[in-house]
Image (cartoon, rainbow, N blue to C red; front, side):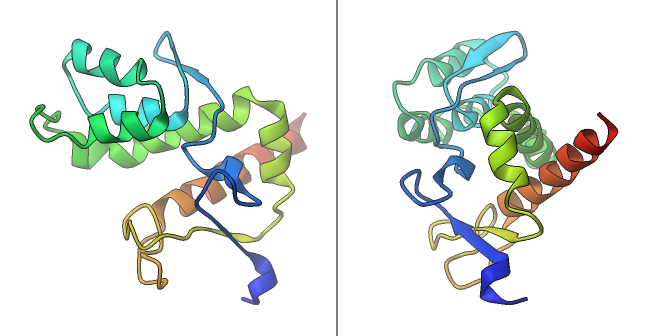
Length: 153
C-alpha cells in the first residue's frame, strides 16, 4: 500500500484530527449526552454509576481519560471482552450523529486509517507500526457500514 493510501491521525489538531476520540463532537448513547467519544468509552469501564457520571462530566477528554485509567476505581469484570464493542458503539454514534463527520470519513475512500502514536500499541500503531491499530480498524469498519448505508438510501 502506498503512503498516499494511508491516513495517520492522533492529535485533534492534525489534518484528520476529527478521527480522534478527543475531538469535540458530543454523542448521545445510553440515554445520555457525552461530550466526546473518549468520555463515553472511559465511562463504560465502570459498573458504578457515580464513577461513570464523574467521567461524563469531566471538563476535557484528557481528564476523562485520566479518570478512566484510575485503577483505584474498580473496573467492570468483563471490560477486556467488551472494550472493542464499546469503542465500536462510540465511533458509530459519533459518525452517524454528525453529518459532516460522516462525509469526512467517507471522503477518506479506501485509505488505511492509522492512529499513529507511541503511547498506545493496542488502539494505535505503537508509533512504529507494530501496534494493533484497533481504533483505525474500527474506523475503517464504520466507514464501510456508512458506505453501505449510503448506497441503500
